[in-house]
Length: 366
Image (cartoon, rainbow, N blue to C red):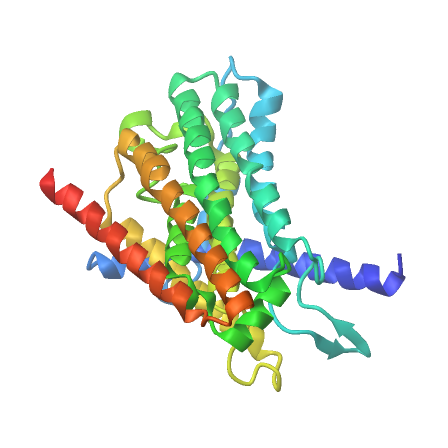
């Protein structure tokens, strides 16, 4: 391995880890401030100007908080489970391009840790499924029935919604004919954001990612009213903080991936002339998507468990399959008969409106 390449790769990996950890800290502040505004409260404003030091105060509290391990717990797995949960969250963005290629110090540098990988989406789907093992093992190793139930719920939920999530990846792959995230972004520069052509696929992706990161209204594995705190009931101190960190870093990760697949990624006006604008555009899109997740948490109640599973299997998964069929047929017509890609958008939009209307009608009848 070339020494310069190794140094470049190491610097990019360290920068990505710093972004993840800092993003986790200040996403908690962003969420608390946004929730406060939505619910007509003030939010954190004591630690530092405008509450900007609140994440540091929380970190100090968790670092010095006493850590307990239940006497009947499997201690090795109990300690290992938070690590298994947080590591996939830290590495999942390695293949995401944060900006265009830049020239620096006489080298051409790609703004992604893994470079221009042709298996980017495959890598993401593989890594995303690992963290569920940490949650299940955390519940089981605690030797607590509430924690075990939380872990089992998480397994069922993540498997159910990962199917729809995986199918939501297929739409952009079919349009770009590639699993390379850089090519997907570049194709959106030429064709326009894929959310315009596949609104149904984008909606499925956003809903499935809420379930994937255990966010309300899909936070069944935690379900405080039913399972005290779910799979992390017996955790405290920094071990609990690792679960907390994994959830919030995964929020950032799915927002980055969603922005890349459906909202143009780092693309925007004057990016080719000023490459530094790429990460700025991506940051703005990620902040908007994160606000959407926070808004959903502030406004929607938690789904009942049977309805959560029914929603995933009976509605979201069939719609994801329909979306794949629509995009595949649209691309065949586009390649063979030069039919406009807007046909995909029209059919996708009509399907989405029809599905939402049907769900609303079923709920109204109840």
